[in-house]
Image (cartoon, helix red, strand yellow):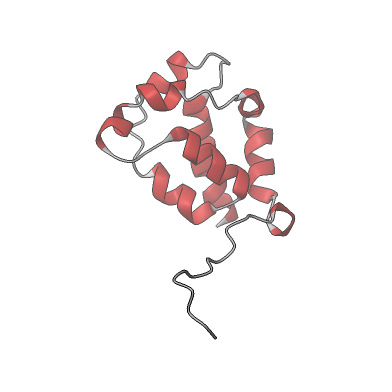
Length: 110
């Protein structure tokens, strides 16, 4: 085959139909205020941990929706549980309870 100076990248799309939806379903049942999140980024902008590490609550929300439990577990290690994110959320998402809920559900699901 001829070399054209570029390579074809692997597909990066996510097939949500093949994901295990038990995790996101359990999280939404335990913390229904997460449905109100509009992804504005206010939580990430005020995050104390986010200023020193690459922790991002919006990324955490995305990973939970995708069902990527191992990446969620890695991200949660960075949270200092200070609560600034919850104080500034314009939609009133209970982020501290969300983080506790995610911990609890990950232990239950294994």
